[in-house]
Image (cartoon, rainbow, N blue to C red; front, side, top):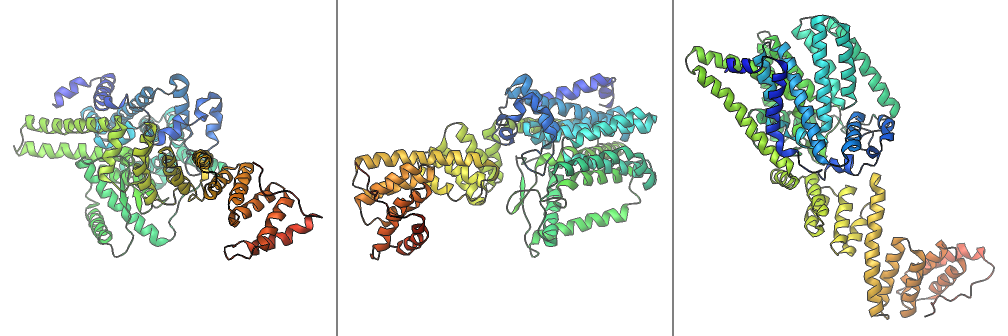
Length: 614
């Protein structure tokens, strides 16, 4: 097999061709996938800013997702140029994702050539990276663009840096520094490349730590400028744990997640979107002590065999841990909902590269020993490698089919994680897009139950109730929202629409039963909540005219009259309330208090009638 592969990859263009061909076979099902009801809507479909090319400079002055935590202007810029040329044709967005992935896989081939030596090893490593099923989440969703761009620029910087170390040509160092800067502008985790390069110089090149630091001085300068830029723009927010116990438990949960990642890399079965993990909440939780027992054994093995380990193993393990540091729960908390941390499979996109290098080097050594012992024949060894690659290819095709169909992707995730609020909410949005609000209701309701303080989930549930013909239940849900935050406009719009539905319903009820004061009072409340003060005032007056015991309606007349500047009418209403000695009059003392404040403002009471003329 080595000879066959060597003949097929004699030239670089053939390497690129075969990487591209196999990647296309793996991800073809994704290309016609429409935009999904996840980050795609927020970043592309409903993002008016990317739809005007003149807004390009503004992308570099504001945060991503309208938060002060993420800064990814190049990601937004890529969407802007795609929209400029292709509008909202999702095929081209998906195709660009695949192209970036293929380019990154080719860069893995180039880097592996330096680190592993030999074109065949490098090619196998590139195929493992390109075809491993765990990559599906980043490649198969347009919203994975940040990971893809970050990896492409970081790998470009790594390869150019290796070329600089090989040739000492300053142009390669300059190019590496530029690519590193572009990686930082794509995603914050590109910053881990700086430490990986220091580790490379220290371990692989056996330089002193001081000389390893000196070799990456342009990268250090770029990092400083990037941090100053973020600080100047005010995009520096991180979500920290409330105390040291939170850090310990959060990090311990992450360590449990790393073990899950390692299992998925070896046996990629059970992959699904938006993977999460229950947070370890107590010192008495058996999982806490089990996780630490496993890691103490691993650390002990490291300490014991450290000196006997080849430099490649030490470097690759260190690089792997560095790539996972941004999601380790130490720098910032990364959660999907209360009580869970995010364990997205896209976190492994770049982190798996050093493990791939180890797998190729270790696999070659293991198969070589089996050949020497005559346990395997040459044909058998070749079939083993081919079987692994074919297995990965087929699993990735399966995941691509899921990614190409949002309904399949989300419902598969729900099978593995039924209490994932974000997935439930996304399925609800999918049904809303299909104009099936009744089908969306149970998912929105579940999301709201799981995260009762999430305004977006509550608003979606309330809106779906109204759209499903249950506006009264909808407005009750709207009233539970205390702070809609950045979606206040959506909240106000949908809330108003729900009240307008109720107004139409109760207007019809009043027409059918004009002597029903309860209907009239409810109509007044809905008018008032919708901001129609004049209509609310009229409805409350009619309610009081039908039933003079409706002191609540009379009180509302007084309050609305005050708001409208009709002080005389307000005083008249309060005087009536103040004189009523009925036990049902709960507003007498409040009315007297208002009279004390309002009476000095006028010289004489109003003769205006509180009862509307028919």
